[in-house]
Image 1 (tube, rainbow, N blue to C red):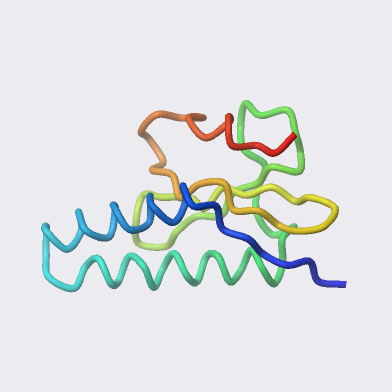
Image 2: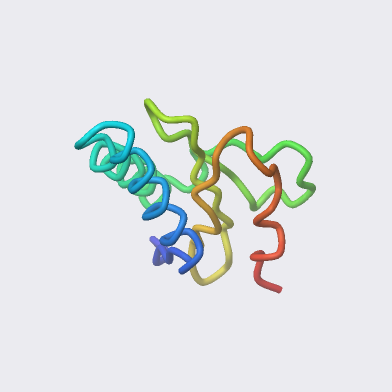
Length: 104
């Protein structure tokens, strides 16, 4: 049974902010970023176990997939009733800042 995929409002805001930044760097690059994020999210939705565990996080249900071509990860958690995207996080900036988003 496939669980529904939900994207947190914070993750959506991170996607939009990074897309705007990339567009300022080069016209159209922001759209390329969003396409790659969409691909990563589609992978999460179709095969949640395909992501790798997040280093330094004890909960094995929290995983991440790489956003191709860009230094970002889609960080998500597998819950009994859904797969929740917690963050679209830069690979080197503020590691673990999204920990407070984990549902309890």
